[in-house]
Image (tube, rainbow, N blue to C red; front, top):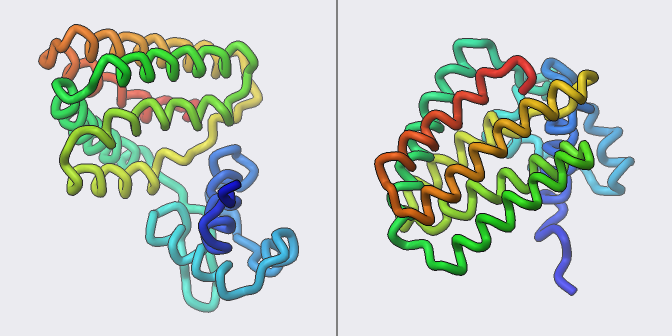
Length: 213
């Protein structure tokens, strides 16, 4: 069996990123390095390496002698990220549209179905994983490695945000609408309608501006 994490540093990275995504660590929260080391039974070196990587990926802020805190984004920055991700992800989709096979299209349909199952169960953590896999699927097949790297950096720095909310009904309703857009995007891949696909993916990323995300 393959190990879940490639290294101790990866383990710490995913542990912290997951807690940011779940809302356990809120914007502005200070990261307690000693607590993480004890919790994961990991030494300080890989923990520090993971924290600096999280800072490089824009999930954390770092100030010398003050340590690491969870990064907060203002509305202007959300809009800036939304525009960049929408532009690049729609480009990736149009590059992938003639590359995806029938098997790939079935995989996208399966991911849309998995997302629906997550929403029916109010499992927002699994929703995050599956919706990320949906977009990653065609991105990894777009044939442009530079574009992939750029989007990876942008998404790591912003999209690992919380899908947790006290108002689960409202959040679920919003995500149902979003998954309807996933379904539409999958259908446009199947019809090879490049122009409508580009428009649909670009519009899809307006979700970043929601006050629920």
